[in-house]
Amino acid sequence: MVLSEGQLALCTVFTLWLGGLPLMYSPAPRGDCDNCCPIREPKDIQFFLFTRQNPDTGDTLFVSDKKHLRASHLNRTNPLVIYLHGFSERAPGGAGESSKQMKDALLAADDYNVVLVDWSPLTALPWYVNSVQNGPRVGRYIARFVRFLVLSEFPLEKIHLIGFSLGAEVAGFAGKTLNEWGLKLPRITGLDPAFPLYVFERASQRLSPKDAEFVDVIHTDGGLLGYPWPLGHVDFYPNGGVPLQPGCAQQELAKNRWLGVFIGCSHARAWQYFAESLTRPQGFLCERCEPTDAPASGAASRSTRDTNNCTMTREVFMGMYTDRTLRGKFYLSTNPQPPFGKNLMPHEQQQKQQQLPVQRKS
Image 1 (cartoon, helix red, strand yellow):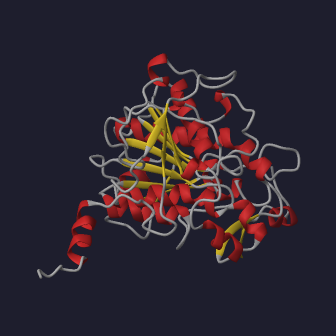
Image 2 (cartoon, one colour):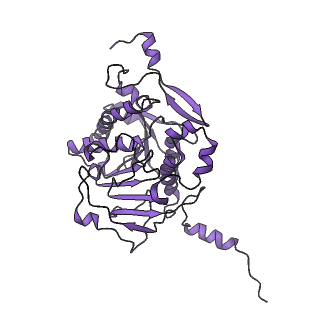
Image 3 (cartoon, one colour):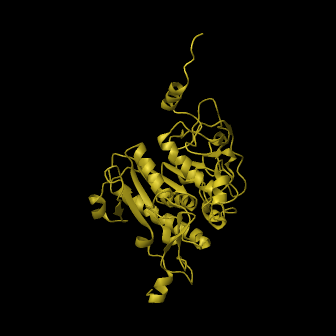
């Protein structure tokens, strides 16, 4: 399809700055519809690889392009995390944006290969419905990228997909496609998976436990922008998993109300909590748990063992280093400001003890 100059202008993605944060905007949507700009997968879905050797400037990778892969900083002995941003976001992003914050936290925590997926042309404002419709196609393209890595001798067991909001649903579609090809991802993490337009969808049309060997989900804006019901093998509900998350009331009032509809402080807490867990593995200590309810019509099936495997006989932590044998719904509370995790790390406990005033003997 050849576009005129006027049509090309309508298909251009712009950055709008609202409330101090960038939002991606396009005059016309991209997708598979009569009035949509056509999807150009190599341009509209891009992969940027970051490692500790190139933490600031990513290597651009392409599906089936072995030349760029060989020239990149990819280290096959290190684990690989693929991060997918949400609606109206971008990658690699800048300060305060989920892609950059997640990348920086991962590289600070360990020697990861971090791939940021930029699918911003397909998820730009105000085209949310089109973004949802693009999800399966984006997921399939990401699955092609994962398969390319595996065929290029990168171990599948070292790959972990993390998605925020719409990105979590896309990660699920990637997992479903890989399942069709006989490849099972070891882990998918859903950070407040998107709720609007997914509320009545069956497990085949949203993130589900079947999409990877282990699916863990963090809910922070349930019922508004985030999916409120269990979606994974284990689901975490900080502060009940609903808005407003601690510290958000004041922040929301300071922002443009229209901005809050799209990115929301409580919604963003999911990736903020997870990013913090990378450097504070024991920060998010769970307080109680419940077994996952029996699946309703259309929900993903779970075995009797899974639905009853809720236990607090040991310490349970939310985040990157959570126990992959966990099953059920886990609850915890957080601080209103960073550090969000209430549980002190050993070095933090030691610092606190050193700061206590010395009691003099009478």
